[in-house]
Length: 350
Image (cartoon, rainbow, N blue to C red; front, side, top):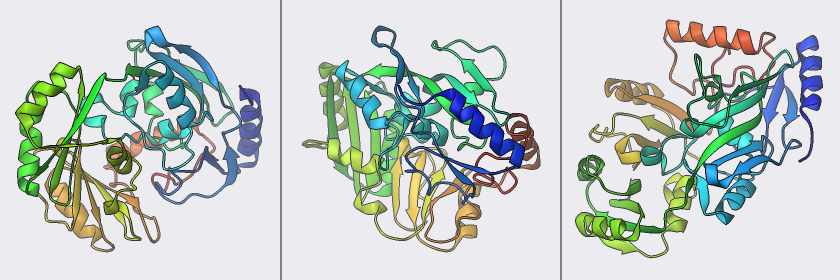
């Protein structure tokens, strides 16, 4: 293990005294995500290593600067994995993975990154060393601060350590491919979601619906017979290309929009679409028409994120209601009273 919490505390206290903004980063692989922020570079990679790992308890605690790939390699050696398949986008750290809260193809069936965070150790805007949660699933009475930090994009504090629940790697896996329309793909994904099938990922793109089955060999074989379609040989590269946004759909310099909608929502008619998570997450590409995109998705009871932008990143996330904005400001004031952590990364005044 390298680095120390005391070094973090000293840097933060000095910045707070001078009201100097800090741009908190690990590997910097998600720097494109959220609004642009300024400030002195605060590198978390110096605090790296495994604090504790109990394979029999399916729990690991790691320092924020630990490379995500190293952690996944350690887990794989014991036949385990991170449940939500968080994307790397490069040399990512576990602190950055938790701070962004992004999840991969397995999210709809296994759960989000937030669901597997058991506890965190955080240095707040006063330089205080704080711990929340623990190393078991039911450890919180009151406000679940550990999961509040997930997806906060470093605006509330520096996540120094995180404890995660992990899962065993399924003994068998198989991906099936069916050629269907976008409308039929949405219908099928929702039909399958209501059945006891070992589906761990779905993706619709270019007129093809990909379905990954994972679990016991007999269960996978039975589901394969029920779902039908062609078997995809060596499916790992495909799902990695979706998780890491290296698939052909994601290439190019256009804006990339992430749509979160009820899974049963019919096709929205918004350009080329890639659909994941049983219909709940949809991606579209293209510059302009941001108002139309947001209005269309809002009418479907969903929300929109400008995930990657070729231009100025001003309005990235769906604007908050006045009540929610007040809650966000109050939380920011409590954890970062001097406003030094990634100012404006999520919203203008946060």
